[in-house]
Image 1 (cartoon, rainbow over the protein chains, first blue to last red):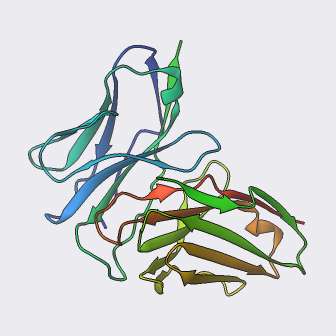
Image 2: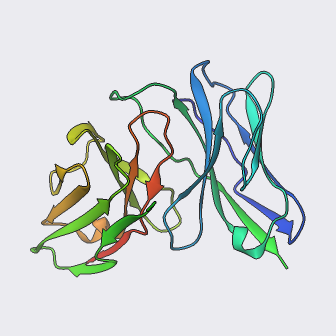
Image 3: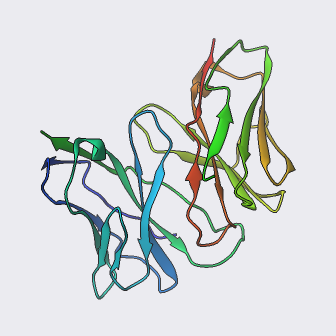
Length: 114
Length: 113
């Protein structure tokens, strides 16, 4: 799976949009971009994933550049409960196999400030 | 029910003890995972089960022994652990080992003394 690069930490004011960047310059054509987050002392939580089109769900929006070398997770109105480590992960889009793994990088610690 | 339940929540064990961690899901998922997480580090994949068969072993020491007795249960048997094995152990499940999102439990906080 391709590697990802994220800033180690970011701050965001409560109520404002949080934009979390991720670089994945070696991503392959069959690899999806996934985002998970981990609130302190809890298990990771799935947020969103996409291949090449922008995606939106009730939690967030995912913007993937046309060349797919980077993406941005957008939390439209950050709250204090969004303070967490956010992980950007790329993985192959195929069933099973010894190489189909969900591997976490170091992530971005997002601190939402009141 | 979108829950993955892990028991116990906390476990303290001696280096000569044998203990087991348990994980249960009732979402009909056919892939289950064990991760290990040290403080301030990302989760590290240990094992993947797909349709109750071991699919991936990330070169984990044999003192950790996984077991998948049925499609809803995943165990991690622990024997002769070292203090450096103290960590948060996370279980996860997904519909299969493909694209589906993974659901994580809250973890078992293990301390080896």
